[in-house]
Image 1 (cartoon, rainbow, N blue to C red):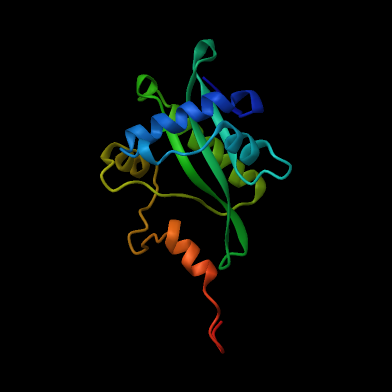
Image 2 (image 1 turned 90 degrees about the vertical axis):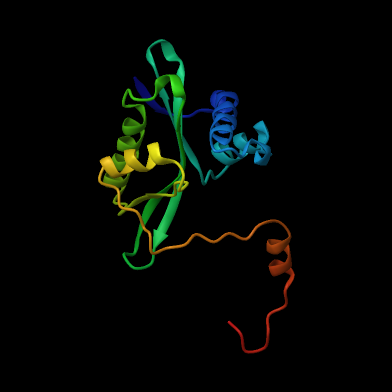
Length: 165
């Protein structure tokens, strides 16, 4: 296996992997990104998101990890937030996912980042078991919130109240 940082020529396969992941997560209708979106995000002037690809023998793309930096105000250090980790079904059980995570863990250690964090769907038992086997801890006391669509627009257009921060 070979793990490497994605390059602009990988944009089409990254799009395929994103769609395959969305299908696995039963949300394929939510994928709206274009090849240009991927190209701009990963390879634009100041990229803020990164992608590692894992290749099987013969150069076939077996999976990917898409990540970006987060920050802990408590530790005063950056960390990595793993947005997506996906290994194609034909390559599962061969250590590809573990190797991608190990690559990100090394990135954290080398750069002085203090954590590697991600979210997982609560019904994805194989992933939950895999992450636990690595020593990852569930952050059960935290609840993820998201603003998007009209709620995001409504809040963005809200005028601040006097005296509010």
